[in-house]
Length: 163
Image (cartoon, rainbow, N blue to C red; front, side, top):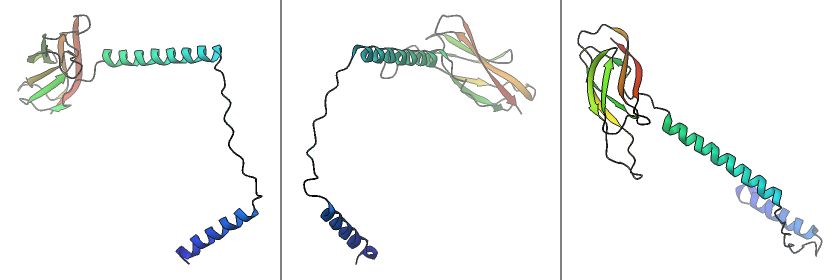
């Protein structure tokens, strides 16, 4: 007996089941009948495909029109030097960073196509310095640049804390 006799008991049960089966109860499989696809089914399928394609297009547009959050820390100290990453600015344009209304740094967005799809997305990486005389508390860090979509001024704010 192996594995508490399980294999032996299983073999005996299968052999017994085979002996109780009526000879000739086995049937050959019958080929499935092909159903003809009707016009309403084709129309319904096409309608579903259009709805799904429209949803995918709307999602893709949302991905490219919604701006991601400004890539910067949330908390700073006076005099600290840090970086901001962002996108959505016109390629080759100047981006200016502000804390409240004080300019704290500038950068130029990339203007060469990048990646496998050779896209130009107006990406920037900007170094800035928190003013040494800034008061502690809540402030707004923002970048300003011409929008990649229509060239209008684009403000990208982020609440920050200075300690």
